[in-house]
Image 1 (cartoon, rainbow, N blue to C red):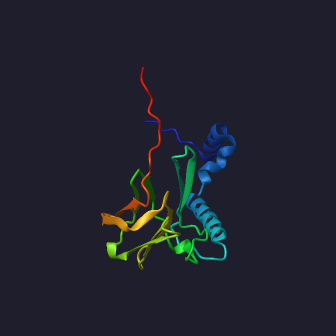
Image 2 (cartoon, one colour; image 1 turned 180 degrees about the vertical axis):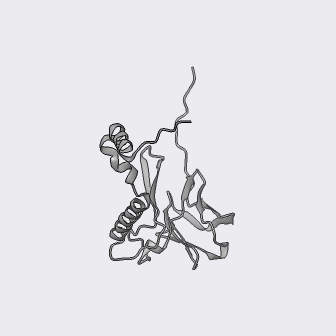
Image 3 (cartoon, rainbow, N blue to C red; image 1 turned 45 degrees about the vertical axis):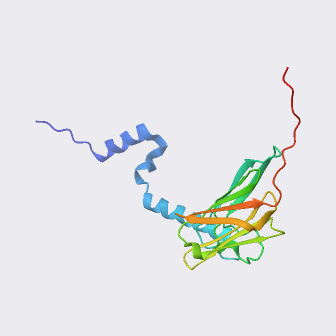
Length: 187
């Protein structure tokens, strides 16, 4: 049996022929590249934090829905400081995802607050009963959210339930929506 043995010069020639300037492809150090990328990301995060310290993870986003007036309403959420009322540094707090549903007689608010007990949740109505403040401040979890309600509500006519990390609050409107319209005659 005859074996053909390539020498190093033939192997180098073969690589140059097929890979041309990619000769460094075989000398690529993946660990070194990952360390370089990690250092780059850490420098970006240090720049992002600036002078104040924000404890991660970082959350930022927005929700958009069509309002009853037909115009889009955009609401931001996250734990990036934006100057919330009564909180000097919002960075420690996460904003829970919140959904507001409005109908003729009630306004319903649903908030995701995983990992807390119902006794840890603090709910307050401010701004003439038109803003709901949801706050949780425990060593393990911190949530804060101000929810602008679409109408004034009765503070004594509210029902709040909390189960499996979901907070549901149903408010009774101060004044039910009066449907105005004109009867259309069918011919």
